[in-house]
Amino acid sequence: MHVADTEVLGLIANAGLMVRLVLMVLLVFSMACWAIIITKTIQFRRARREDEAFVEYFWKTADLSKAFAKAKKLPNSPVGRTFRAAYLELSRIRQKTDEGASFGSPQSAVERCLRRSGDNEVDHMSQWLSFLATTGNTTPFIGLFGTVWGIMNAFHGIGLRGSANLAVVAPGISEALVATAAGLAAAIPAVIAYNHFMTRLKSLDSQLKGFSLEFMSIVEREILPFAR
Image (tube, rainbow, N blue to C red; front, side, top):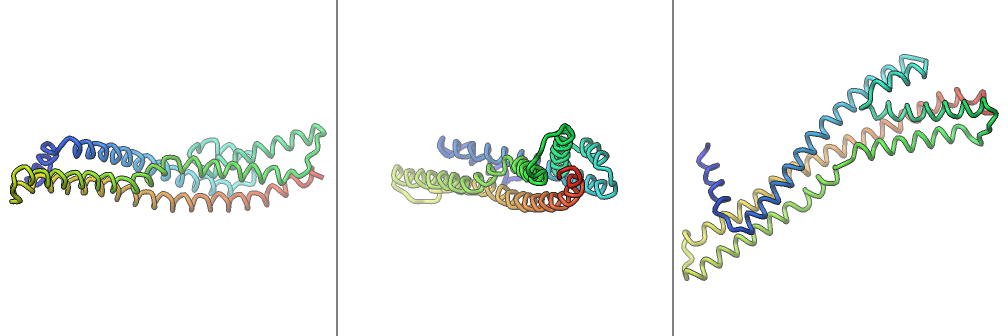
């Protein structure tokens, strides 16, 4: 192990109870954030890969039932799940119409289904992102609290010994700086990841809305003959 790493571990081991508690809290935040970052990275990659596969197949086939079967094989595709919800709604409208029931506006029913499903997909993909934002906003202040506490210990040591030499001040200042570094180490990846995932989320939202508009043009052709 590097000498600097050994010294940092020594500072943590010899830090006061409050500073060690602060470091433990920051460690929990950091571990949770990295778990979320890894999980969401895998989730977004799978969603993008399966979305591309579904959209490509959707425009190659003119059969909505085949597209529905394809979407069922791509469970991680937000666009595919949105299409499945709209297809089922369209099938329900067709069945009710065949049974003699009347709809005021079948197009509106499918549009609402697409909008509701798209919103649900965005909400699903945004789960736990708020924790990254919370971590980015709060952990620097938690680290700052540890910093202030460490400096207070340094001044307390000066008061007890009546001396301000480096040997007296160094331990408190060192643990204060470790708390500051730990707070930043937890916050910086969280902020970067949050901004990255929010950009991906906005892109997904735009893709879902674009697909919904294009699908509605097909739906209008499909439902107009029996919606009159």
